[in-house]
Amino acid sequence: VSDAGQWFAEPPIRGWQQRFQVRERLFVGDSPYQHVEVLDTVPFGRMLTLDGAAQTTEADEHVYHEMLVHVPLFQHPTPRRVLIIGGGDGGTLRRVLQHPVALAVNVEIDELVVRAAREHLPGISAGAFDDPRAQVIIGDGAHFLQETELRFDVILVDSTDPVGAAKALFSADFFRSARRALAPGGLYAMQSGSPLLQSAELAEVARALASVFPSVRTYLASIPAYPGVLWSFTLAARDGALELPPQAELERRLAASGIQTGYYTPEVHRAAFALPAFVAALVRGEPRVAGHPLPGR
Ligand code: AG3
Image 1 (cartoon, rainbow, N blue to C red):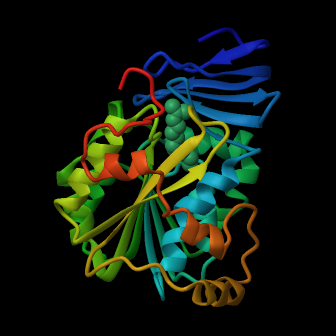
Image 2: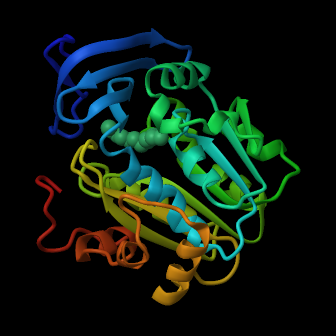
């Protein structure tokens, strides 16, 4: 990781490394879980990094947060209780609270992330932490899921890469306790990494989720500040088969909510589930197909 004032380089993934020109290093700290920084970057404005990996930036946070939140929350006809695991910057919580939910519980393991983001990236949570419908718990999300008596309409996992503290959030055991904590008709959604640079992890997520949930579907978005840009999310249903609502129904739900978006639209919602052949093969557990764009796979 290079010095501030010039360039900030992420730890490489499979020989791929991205770097950001930095104007100023605004926050540096270490928690028991990770190294936390907030940088002011030239291309994306302020950026949160955890263990050197770009988590969210002022310029493109809306892409990730809208797609993690609005796809499942408009997919569900009446989401009232929502659980967020991770998401300490508050961007997910803020998008959840744009919906007419009664309760949003946010369980984040690292208090330092919440503190750094509230102070240096206040526009990302935009007051969400102070909403009376929000209940923020500093604690272990996997543990919370095992213990909770609450049943949620939607559970969202807004985690870092599947290494270190977040690894537990990518296991079949975790998915089982998530399914148990869903109400009938409930939906589970998670960020599932780069289909190009974390293809093995994405395939494993799809396999493990399908061993727990009756219906699992991958969807995609383009997130400029993440390595490889093309990014995946995975949606799973507690009961029955995941069918995308018709365009007109999604339009009705969006209009009724009054939510303003920068990336999400009903068309994008449906189109995000159209998978390039190599991603479809990956999540079906098939070996590499011809034309797979990744070198060395
Ligand atoms: N969590 C997913 C970030 C993963 C990026 N990976 C990387 N840069 N190597 C984002 C959290 C935003 N609330």
